[in-house]
View 1 (cartoon, helix red, strand yellow):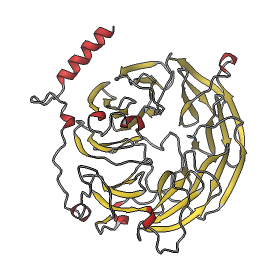
View 2 (cartoon, helix red, strand yellow; view 1 turned 135 degrees about the vertical axis):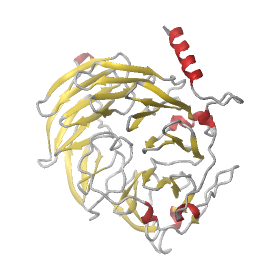
View 3 (cartoon, rainbow, N blue to C red; view 1 turned 120 degrees about the horizontal axis):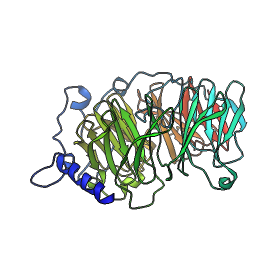
View 4 (cartoon, rainbow, N blue to C red; view 1 turned 90 degrees about the vertical axis):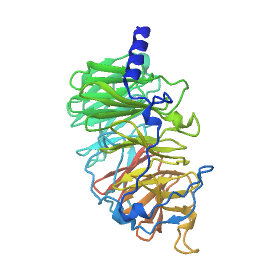
Length: 442
């Protein structure tokens, strides 16, 4: 069977487009960059040297507010990373800087960093294998379910969740996939596929998409859990804590696997459109094992590692542009801009079309005056666009608001609670978990 699979892979690769001179996949050739006529691209500059890619202060003069999307109000958060693109755009936040409520402990066990929300219900999982349904209005746990038998009770569980209507779909590190009706409080179906699952989950129509630890893609029937199709991508040669990441746009499912390979899958025809090995373009072969996310729109795929950021053409996998930055947290994509924060504490705005720098500044230089308050905790865990401004969250308790109009730090707020879990924005409020309690900020 392995020999047969190898032959098929060989035939597939030979049927794809190659550069006849070098024998390298076309996607490894950087396309010539062509600037658009808009002001923000004309004034943008590549301020990195090929030798060191060092950042410096730079301002193209662009009004940043004109290049981001209008703020919207999310009403639900039904999957990890918010949506199919793994990207939360500009959203509305009350920004009153006060505690709306702090719940009692959601669980006595370690709660997963990712949690979901829909129709008054928060969905959590913990290391014991509990799936917990917390009702917001009542501020109480209404339903707790544990799928696992006593023989597995002491084995730590890592559960990935996605929510459709009132049905919770779960995939774990034991190889189980199951559907749980949160209203009827009972299992709809359950399957075990023998290998731990190691990815976020996506739902497209009546199909469930996920990836196991061997980097094999599974497509399951949403109503029964039966396997419809599977595809084995290249297996990782190293153990890594970073999981496979999938996203989708239209009929294209994009996988960034733990081996540093990108696969675009046509979900209608169930075939591979193109394959790209990111390790061929990053500074270090181990860079991708610090992979952060793959964010896509209708035309491009953004692949981010700890030391690089690359844009690929969604249709053919060609490399559009690639830069080498030391990325600190998940980037943000909004309309024409990509926002990144580097480990050197440079906040940088890039053109989504070309990767060129629109604006860049070190955080320490963004105070309005020397007497302005400094933020103490430099361990930024995440950032979000809210109210047309940028908000940075530290692992300690600080919320740093940066004005995109003035390009300066506008305010520093100490919430007294650590921003270590995912932070979700629902109905103009912020929610996160601190010390096993749900925190709501207004």
